[in-house]
Length: 284
Image (cartoon, rainbow, N blue to C red; front, side, top):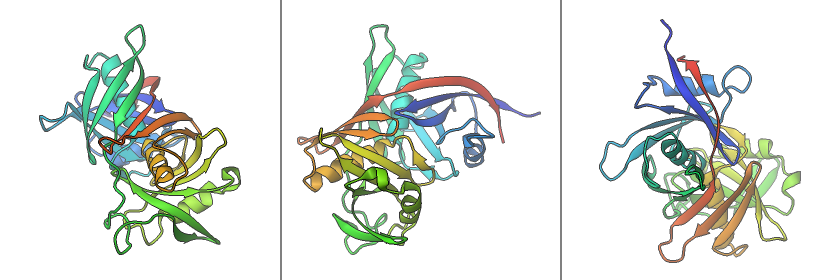
C-alpha cells in the first residue's frame, strides 16, 4: 500500500518549501522526496523539503532538517526557519513566542511578532555571528576573501566570502539587471575554491540605501529569496563600507531587515512567513 503524508507549503519572501511534521510522519528517504516533490511541473513545486522534529538535546525546543530541490542537505535556511516558527505557533503545536531551533549550523532563536488576532505576522531570527574565515568552505590560504577576484565563464568578479553556517560569495555590481544570474551563478557555485560549493549573491546598493539582491542558491538555482544570503549580503556591504550595520535587503520575493549587532556581533534577520496551502502527497 502506498503511504501518504500530510504537508504544508509555506514561503518566506517567496522562498518556498514543503514542510512535514516528523512527529507525525516518517520520511525514510528525504533526498528522494525532496527531488520528486520539488518539481515545479510534476510535483508540488518548491525550493526544497523541510523536516520539523523534536530536538534531541535539552538546549533546543525543535529541530529542522532541510533538503534542497536537488536532494542535497543544507546546513540552514533563514527563510525556512521563520516559516517553522509560524508553523509551530499558528498550528497550536507550541504557545511559545520565542523558540529555540536546532539546525546543522547551531541553535537559532526565533522571536515571533504577533498580529492582534494572535497569529504570527513576522519573525526575527538570531542568525548568530558571521564567519569570515573558513578553510573548509573556502580554499584560500586563510579561508577568507574580501573583495577578492574570481573568474566564471568569460568574466572576472570581485566578491566577499561570508559564512552564515553555509557559504556565501557576495558580488556587488553597478547594474544587477544586466547580470546573467543563471549563467554566472551556476559557474561560480562550483568554482574550485569552494570545496562544498557555494551560494552566490549579486547585489546592487540603490540610491535609497536599500540593497537589491538576487541569489543563486547552492543546490536549488535561482530562488525568490535566501535568508542566509540576505544576511551575508548585509555583512559584506558593511565590511566593504557600502552600508552600515543595518540594511534592507530587497530580493525577488520581498524585503528582509538585517541588523549586524554591534554588541554581540550576531546577525538578526526579520521578515514575513506565509502559509500557502496544506495537502497530502505519496511517498516516493
